[in-house]
Length: 353
Image (cartoon, rainbow, N blue to C red; front, side):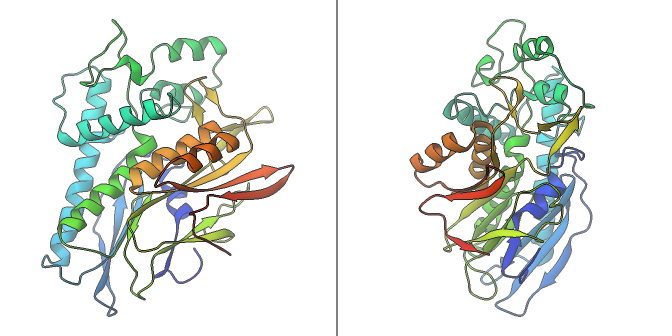
């Protein structure tokens, strides 16, 4: 991370910790949060451990009646509910039990993220499919060890995947086929939104919630809209904030900010690089020149979903998609003949580093 940490949060620092395929995405370990309060306008920061990494919640206490301790306890309660509902690594979670075919009475959170996922599936023409977890498993980016699958394996697994094989009520549509779910594509963004919704209920107007993905709103303790650094996506750039491509500056409105990329998340075998991004429509890792996609959206779950979507469809389709969507802005970094190039949508407020 570079710059004043009270003014700028580096988005890739959490992606490295939380979204590495070498570490569970949804394994939740909650330890005691750290309180840090600034004398400037009563800002506080709560930090702790969640979802295989760390979380950070900064907010302005002005006008808030709840104590820091009460807020801390509620945030951890929300994160615990997320774990016991959506974690694929918690064997007793509703998600794990659903995938095992055990009886589940979905709570409101499970229903909500399922409904969101179903909407994203149809909006993206199946390119964002939370019911394709087995594809990630056979490529080694899911819950199992890695291996190189054959075309036959991919085809057989794809036949068991797809949100189109589940109804709105989560019941199987195709006899004998019940796809397993994996919410990793939107879970971190969704988690940030849950915490932001809670802070909104307290009357908080200035916040930055970072639980692997970011939701920010209002201003920081200096009175400026939040700013978020964007790393240059090149192989070997493993130190977040050490080499920034630029800085996105907010305008004070509530925004989810998410970067998805492959440069820190791939593996090599027999001299070939394989992206962690799997196209559910083909069953294979994507092969294109898009290195990273940063999406700005009204909420973090949407930003998370569409950042992943852009990494599936590649540069040209991503440009068209971002430009056509109201309320969505994007910043794409891509390889152009061995050189790194950038494209930003018209409303992406970028300060070049």
